[in-house]
Image (cartoon, rainbow, N blue to C red):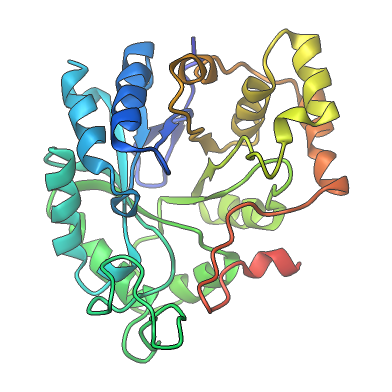
Length: 306
């Protein structure tokens, strides 16, 4: 079972340290994964409009029989919805079949053309992402609109995803920004520890959630020598070590799986020792890479240069 650890956000709300990610999970599989997760004891489910599977995620939450208020539910505003924040929140609530979200995130600091040639990924005639000019709309305006959502009772906390320190610097100095984001959800694992961003967010009181914490087939973190040695010594799996490392760093973490046995196994985090945490930190000294790096046509990952 999970240690049940939680983190307090800057708005006073509490986020469970360990949750289930649902990215790239087909409808039938995500339904079973979420149902298994909740029955296992998960209290934190991470969803997004862009994933296209909010419907089965919401159905699994309902079918679990666990009261809605016992689940910390996150969803995300997609980039084609930046100019219509309230409308797209409503769409996610309808898809999920719930009356409110515990956390609503701006998925990317990029505004895609809401009237383009595709509802999610519009492109220009040259095949590039169809991004609105900064003079017409930007993520600062999107955040101003998201702040208004807190008055509606339809979201309890608001935050962002895939923000670098550059984006925060611009956002926090804007005259329209009256609320500091509660959360920044980003890719973090031993290959991509994002030390600068961690320090920055800690200083600003912005909680970090780590996605893709286990790597992938293209980034075999679970086969790393140090990870395997720690796992062997403490009697845990490599995945459990990586998940516990993320929580040891003070971040919540949302490993994704649609395999019931792995969903259950991932919920068995433990308190990693400082010595083992520092040992795993050393992995990035040899291998440092990002797994999720879509080509937006504009710069996103500013902190990777430093």
